Image (cartoon, rainbow, N blue to C red; front, side, top):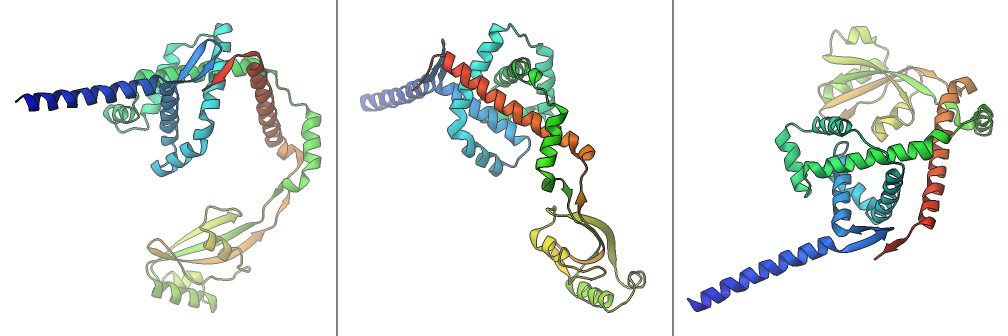
Length: 303
């Protein structure tokens, strides 16, 4: 009995040690930003929050790829976020909690139920309060950046014109191909149909003899078509008919009706796109300069 009691207390001691070690690891300071500390838990929570955001738009495997791609930069990102939030505090910016609740409701729409949402949070080691806090921080940072950077950016008409004149080769509509796409149930039918169409039989007549589905398709490069299918249709001549191609469980025959050649896009047509591009470029440059200046004026220590 004494040996059993000793073994029991030994196991309990190990569990306590592991728990304490885990807590200490979570509380480990990874950086100091002015008077604020960033702990390992802050960094872990940030990674988990990013994972949840990506999961709204990407499959699980793709989410992990994206997390791995940015993981080495996340501490720098977290430091920059702290600097921006400190500016928000100086500016006395306040976020209405109702806006945060509305955003939470939008996020929940991506889940089948409240239980699934809470389960996903728990799987990331988060609770709803963590997500609400992160969303509030994002809104604060947006307001700071809007006040300090975005509201001060001006794109002059002559900048748009100069960019257009210096990049005219980029402002051309790509060649467009107008196709008839015929879907058939099996390979033998598709081969027979393709041969008949290529030897001059009319599509209208063939439609009475073949169980087919007909659609029209306009295609530009790059397209959403599979690469081998895209190459196939862009090698067809006008009125030419392709051999059958299997896509999933059907066989497709393509007939090229016409080619709309590429043509220049006018300055008037392109100006909104150019304006957006120049705005985003200035926004990124000005933001980087501002953050660099904040870092120079701040005490930052990375452990």
